[in-house]
Amino acid sequence: MQQKVKYLIVGQGIVGTWMSYFLQERGIAFRIINDSQTKSATSVASGVINPVTGRRIVQTWMIETILPFAIASYQSFEKKMQVDIFKKATAILLHPSEQMKESFDYRLAHENVYLFKKDAAAMNSFFNTPFGTGAIDECYWIDLNKMLLSWRTQLSVEGNYIEAHFDSKDLTLHEKGVRWRNMDADKILFCDGIHSLDHAFFNTLPFAPNKGEALIIKVTGLPTNQIYKSKISIIPWKDDLFWVGSSYEWSFDNEQPTALFKEKMIAALDTYLKLPYEVVDHITGVRPANIDRRPFVGLHPNHPQIGICNGMGTKGCSLAPYFANQLIEHMELGATIEPEASLNRFKNLFNR
Ligand SMILES: Cc1cc2nc3c(=O)[nH]c(=O)nc-3n(C[C@H](O)[C@H](O)[C@H](O)COP(=O)(O)OP(=O)(O)OC[C@H]3O[C@@H](n4cnc5c(N)ncnc54)[C@H](O)[C@@H]3O)c2cc1C
Image 1 (cartoon, rainbow, N blue to C red):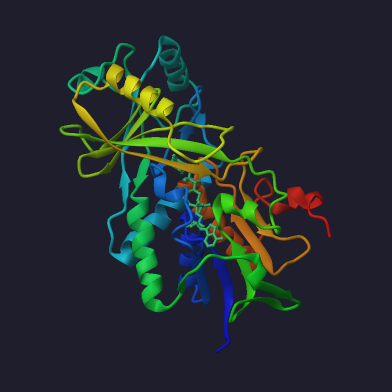
Image 2: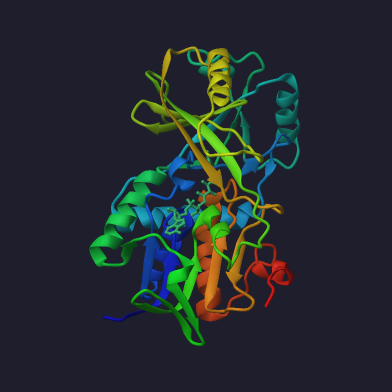
């Protein structure tokens, strides 16, 4: 039997989750098509929102707008779903060099919003801190796997989740919308992460896939209410497990874990961490990054019944709620998409 919804969404990573969440909040009919066997960057991400970035420890793009929106969104998800997935967690900076300490001290004295001093003695039972410590306020940690699973379960119960592999051969475009298998929709929205490169609608966008690896380690006695950052990040994962990473590889042949990465992490852990640990897993994923480090948000210039919300790069946790909502407001209310994120900037890449 033919079914009709307003939106079809491809992919239930963090972007597809927020897209469907906001549609549901507005009472708009949708279905999400997701292949849980296709790798998702969200499922291996450490789940951190950090308002500062880089060696110079500067504020991240649009953080003053994006952070309050993200906080309100994750808190509303927790309330609606009755799950505990979102925590404020100070990031302790274990300065890896004199230069990084100086960079921190400089930023602390100039245009500082999020940094504060931290007494290194507090970390001495856990870490070697030869260059001292600092801290970042307003960092948050999201239990992404718990979030995705709880939402998937809810959507399945409601009949809004379709476990299937999307293949563009199954999609027909017509003037007023799209048809996928037995489903008619006004629009189809691609939230399929790096897999947008696998079909012809958006594969001309300047994606720059970035592989990331992480170890999961077991450490007993390390406080789980903080994030630890040095050359590597050590992030609470669950119970006494911690996520350790990551690599940022622009050139790679496959998504397999590498021995080299594992060696590097173990060397770094042995340098900093004083507590005994055990490696229990080694995970990898590919970030949907792109050359100008801004998301891809909007409708296809030649096929307005096709949209995309993608290109979140290293910042899916903070950017996804804001830009999923912005695309909905654009489609439903004609709101303007942030020009730096809008698909319009790549209009000339789409051949008719
Ligand atoms: C190691 C690592 C660490 C990271 N740490 C952080 C972090 O701490 N904080 C942060 O903000 N970001 C982090 N990121 C980046 C973050 O993971 C991404 O920005 C974000 O997850 C992208 O989400 P997405 O929904 O666009 O893509 P994905 O999570 O990849 O989701 C895409 C979904 O589409 C589905 N799919 C794809 N193709 C098809 C198809 N043909 N048919 C059906 N379904 C399909 C997939 O199964 C998946 O569920 C990290 C990334 C990596 C790799």
